Length: 422
Image (cartoon, rainbow, N blue to C red; front, top):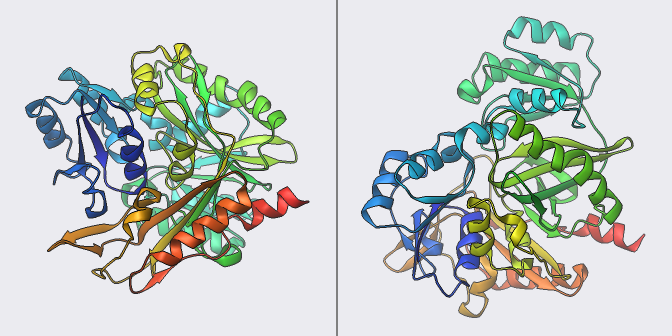
């Protein structure tokens, strides 16, 4: 089988490494991929948002199965365009990907179908939004409606911060047209949990839970990033919580999308807050999370391609999706300055004996050398019998990898370990 994976980050590298385990796979193409994937896939210089060229490539190369991983191409209708040409895909169509593509849509969906989430108001007029903030409870959360590289959410601790966020999104267009409409919502408290789930519109098969570390610095300080590391499973996500989420959130979301004529087939990501009043949805994503994928997929025992094809063909109920009882930890190595400005082009050394544990997110190949080419450069993942061992092993991997201007958090998993030892 010839497989095409659309995307170029650590998430895509994790998917590719897992897909390679299937003996029927003869070739994997990554569009565009990155230099760090060159040993695992054939890199094709076509951007993830260039739908026309992606489809053209798939047809010309007789691709048997396509996996569309990032949010942008999904929202832009990449799956729809490939399916028109008869190419089987993993990923939701555009009318279902809107669950991430529009915060307004997803909040209204949850309200309509009584899916627990934070109280909210929607605004398309900056004056009215600022007026609302005069009396709104503080802290509050301001969200740009559309996609914003995971950065379109601001938690405002003061009224002035909240107003500045509104002006930045709606007037200064910090996130372009994504800020034309905004959501102002209640600030929730409690542990956060990420749960990715396979769904074909008939069955929901949740993956092992995980915990992301969003802030750039230790002890959750510094700016929000795309994620500086993850662990799985998340100790806050007990069996009782999982059952509660399945009954009140996961199945109702699948059914709601079906009722709206927007059947979701692919990976549906549930960003949850375990509040004193029970689990609530903070956000939906229409795809695998990054870097959650880098700890979840290494724990998947069932063949990934088999599961994906079952989702596409709406026969997920026939597959037993199994996960290991082990624990995984991923430490992200980034370029100093991320998530703001940072230098690129530093040579990277990743010892051959640990390459299977490394998912490269931002790298280029030049004259046979691997060079840094992004903010988040790579993730080092370890799987062990318990979380403490997994965290220790992940950091031992990091110590073997080198590139100038590297930085990483030193406390990935610390919060989870504290919970386990309470």
